Length: 135
Image (cartoon, rainbow, N blue to C red; front, side):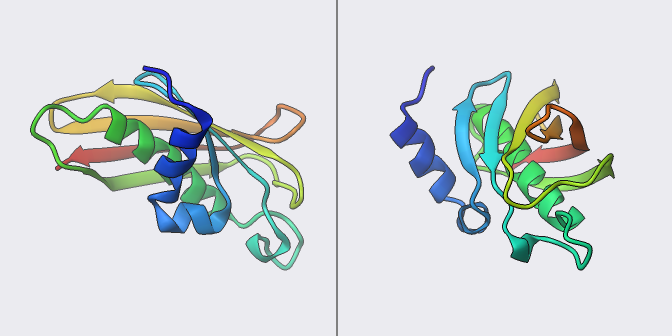
């Protein structure tokens, strides 16, 4: 199924926290979720780099979108049960970060998603693996 940009915007806005962070949902399929975000100065550490908590939050959103899209019949939602993020290099405020989540496993009760966040130069900023339970 292909969503229009307006449908993707409405889906993303249904999650107030990700909307607050400025995440833009660009693609949503069973095999991939693609988002972008431009971190602001308030999303940074004292050293002027993007805060790890910000990176974890936007990665969680992307993985959760994929898990929600893949819910089995009878499930009403999903929630993160575990998440691990490796910070690879600093993210820069004011630049566009690309967020791509793909499934590692989509099961009847549990899903595992991996999310890559890359800078404008295509270099990896962080890598998150999260488990989502189907409710």
